[in-house]
Length: 175
Image (cartoon, rainbow, N blue to C red):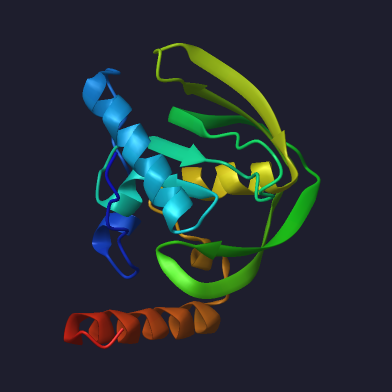
């Protein structure tokens, strides 16, 4: 397993639609391991392949945040929402590609998602609460959408400017 670098907004790859995964092979298994290690190390609860500059429709997530509970890592390949409830939840979302920035985002409270697992088998599961928010957030990444795209333009621009400044500081070695 290898820790990978997470792209920071603004980066054009974060605004691009990822390509479907055609075959599950050893390379994809290794990528899944790297993505989980990178996500846990960040620390985060979800990570999409485009956040690593890999333009494939794959995400990992684990919404268990309590150290006393058993982790539940999930790998979703070519995920798609097949049902979304009309009821909504609002969560204060953050993103590993937009560090230290948070905003309330309203999303369907319950979603049913279909995906392929690492064995190449089709899976379906209904997600609610934080799991529903997380899977929708990560699927958005696969579609070139960020949580800040749900915000009003002024707030989105403010966060983007902060991220541009952070990237300049990192480039100069000051962050």
